Image (cartoon, rainbow, N blue to C red; front, side, top):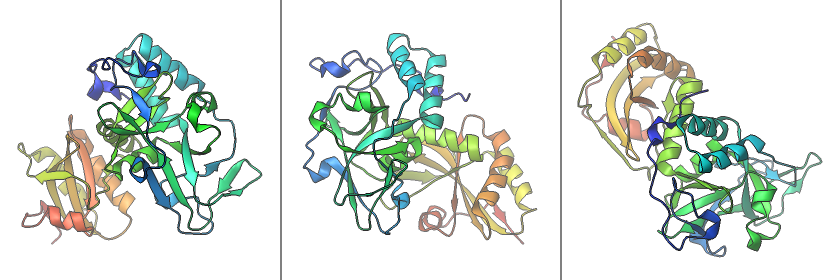
Length: 322
C-alpha cells in the first residue's frame, strides 16, 4: 500500500455553525453542502459526445449505468472509521481505496436516452449532451457529488430515480481539472461525507502516476493556471542522471528543466523534444531521475505541445544531442 496521506496530515477547521445536519461533525473537511439548482447551466458540467458508438471516453466518462449494483463495502467502513478515529494509517487505507480501487455513482441528465445493453450498461447516442450536477457549500464552492452505492444516492431525496454514470478517481480528477467552477468532489454528501478538493486530487493523481508509470505526465490547457520558473536549488545530480540516460536514447534531441507550481503544488518540470513512443521515453527519463527527487514531484511534457515551447522560451536546454 502506498503512503498517500503525508500531504494532508493537518486537520481542517470544524464546519461552520448552521451547517446541514447531514454533514455535521465532518471536522476534517469543509462546510455543509446544499443541492445546487439543477436547472442552472453554471451548476452542471455539460459534455457532448461526438461519435455514434462512443462511451464518452474523450470526455473522461465511462458507460452509463443502467441499474447494475455498485457496492463499496470496504470504502464505507473506512469512511466511517475516519470520522470516529482519524489516523495516518487510516488515511492511507482510505486514499488507497479511493484512488486505486473504488468506482462511484454520479447523477447525470441526458439530452437523449442512451442505448440500453443486456449487460446492464448503456451507450450514449451521437451528440448526446451530458450534464453532471454540482452542489455548493456555504462558502460558495462547487463540488461534484459522488456516491458509493444506491443506498447513499437515495439520501438525496429530491433526485428521485435519476440516470447515473459509473466513474473512478481518474475520471473525477479530469472533470475537476477541466472545469474552473469545480472545487473538487464530495463522497456521500448526505452520509459519512468526505471532501476532496482540487489540490488534494492533483496531489493524489500525481502520486498514482508516479507509482504506476514512474512519471506524472501533465495535461496543461489554455485555462490551466501555472507558474513556471527556474529552480531555486538546481538539482545537479538529477540533471546529470537524466543527461546520461538521454545519451543512450537517439530519439531525444533536447531537454529543459523548469520549476512548476500548479494549485500550490511544486514539481520539477522536464520538457523533452523527442520522436517515438512518449510513454517509453518519459518512463526511461523518470527512472533515471527518481533516485534524486527526494521530496519533489516530477512532471514531464513534450516540447512539441504549445505550453512546452512557451515554458522554455529563451531558456538553454540542459541536454542537446550533438
